[in-house]
Image (cartoon, rainbow, N blue to C red; front, side, top):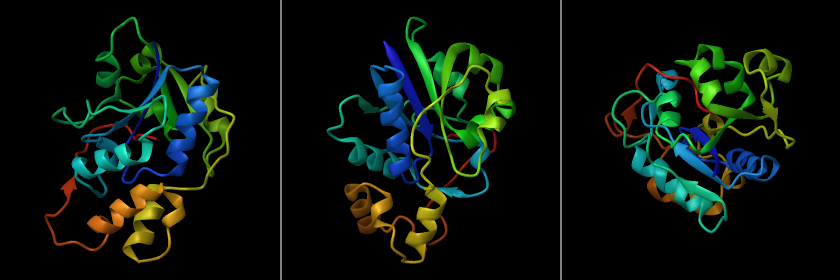
Length: 206
């Protein structure tokens, strides 16, 4: 089994995530791509995080009917900080693992918890990202495969800001994800305590 792992907070999932997953699936000859929403990502401690139930549901809505795409909830079901090495260790040793990262996250891999073990257990596939030179990635992740794909300038941060300001963002996310965000008012101003706060101890997902 050749399994791609595309982790992230997915708050929300957007078109750049999906494009990276599809490109990795085909270019690396993967059997499947798992979208793994982070539970408690330590390098995302500077902002509130939408509850996992919403992030998982948005993923399900986004990939329904896409052959080769699956949602994997092992990180949101784990207590404590989310470490990639622990996620990789939860797979059978016989399974070939491919970690799909945005170039910005890949360039920061030396700061990750037990990063050398992460590299030993998985092949890294890098999705180009605007604002991050691939020259920054190569020394940080020797042997990484750079995916040949469009570098989409889309970010969850920007989408949340657009939604909060009631500005157009419909075509940056799948239609069903847009409808879910709107109907649940996920990124509107909400009362204190209506969101969960991320912890302070893990690498930044793609």
